[in-house]
Length: 323
Image (tube, rainbow, N blue to C red; front, side, top):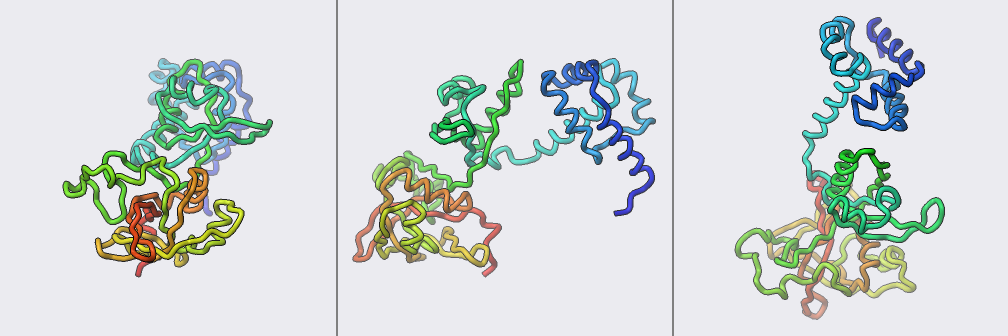
């Protein structure tokens, strides 16, 4: 890569800045300018100074605004950081706010939230308590949606003094959000259309927390040994030949089957299996990842019996292979 003399000079100056020790006066300036604690300031400043490619003001630019900005409490470095913050905020604000709303995140309970009840009381979001093992033994964890994660982060930013920020880990799990007021979501059906706004409560099944529940498997889940390993069954499960309508199978990554909505009479063959518990279902949802979502469907078993059940519908349409 060819760099101009000016670019090399800027990087050299930035490198000198990074090596300079942060004085007590500078820490105070950063804390007052950006509402951060004295313990947070050194880490933030170090990270900023280590960015040798960051945008820097020229001498002429700084001299033009120096008096005004120093009157506001900035020096040259803190104002450059303010510019970077403004650019970052602008980029973030252009992203769809709901891009990760249905994603699932987990974080360890402790400070500032001792339990899910204190989380709900402080932030007003719901969370699912999960038991697990942390670095120091048994620990409690909270599972939250992407929307809840954003609400927690926004709440932390408003607190003074600012509490420690939880470490969020994203979990790739097929979302499951079954309406109890309509048939949404259902394979091959747009439940927003008037003719699909069903009044018959029986058509709203299976319910969100209904177990055991029938699933129609296709692709790799048609292998009984794969299902056995996935949900840790003591023996190979019996899968029943079955089919559903309203969908078609596409290819994803030249390797995986992807069920998407299709004509009402389009038939998909697979195998039916009755998932006994929420824990077994959760294992399956983790296996299928957030590339799929859980949707309702009508399953026809061998012999003609019809049962209400669920299946995995592919959601990343722009990643489907070209037929």
